[in-house]
Length: 118
Figure 1: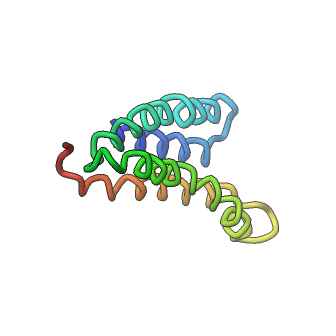
Figure 2: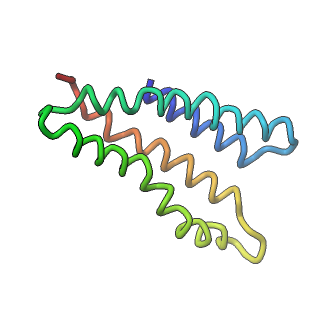
């Protein structure tokens, strides 16, 4: 489910990046905010709980999970102006969105290393 959520979000971001019409843009928004985010957040906490080793440190581990979920929302406002400035005077939203899609897929890669749960 996590992989499907990451792929749906990345696909939706790419649709938004290259949308030529409002309906296509809205399709991308639905993929990102509806399908992808629902799949990802709906299974992310369950995945985090299932991979915890020690019940005595569950609160700390869930705190780390919360940081992992919210940290990109803290970093991107500082990185976005740099990405928007690439290529000249007009804001370059396609670059920002393509980088976001790539980072979404790269964020899923470390989860592939997890082989089993408790």
